[in-house]
Image 1 (cartoon, rainbow, N blue to C red):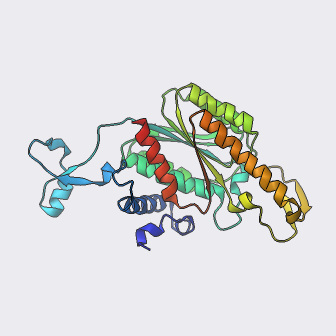
Image 2: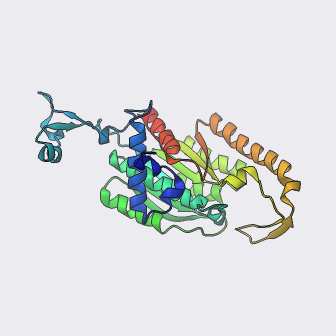
Image 3: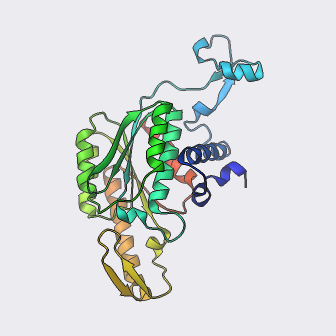
Length: 297
């Protein structure tokens, strides 16, 4: 495997020292793969150059590239899109669950960091909101490198908190989000589905575009527990002892209905629904973002 492409694997990314390094290496790995895929050219103009041609605007000249190569190159930026993205992360206690080495909150933070790095590289403005029962942190969108460092630091220090009230937090955020843009939500959605969808409709009513990354642990999807187990609610600490094989079929059916509900409702509201688990390579999720950004242009 190409060394850069290794950094699209969540477990490898989790071993890196800090969030800035994770974001940079994920994006570099993503761009490496993108150049070899059918998506080549998809909104990666900021990473590409072409040689200067007579008539090109001098202000687009990359003088650093000239200093290195003694050749004139033009950065292939498109016109300013002024896209505003708000990364909205569920930090409630259930997001701290993991059956392996990466919690759902870890995965969400790595993905959000990578999207921030990619977006600001494209000169888009990015903001960050963390919520549980209420909004805990809110950073307004900007597009500077200093702002990126602030977001990455916040993501570096992220920890799961308490109970969730997704609909309450999202409705508050919708009321505060006056400038239309792209809302990117990261959550396991373990809340009342109809209330969550009502809050997401609030964003759509206000003309925001929405991508929903529904993040689950692989074991939450399969319920493939082999031994007797004690299950503890991470938000209420309530415990039950059971034999998982007795519940597996009914659990899997309930999970299927849970996922299908969101798929159907999001489709009806023109919300991009992306189901991922914490083993999903980051190129899959980043590509979905680029497709959405391209559509919005």
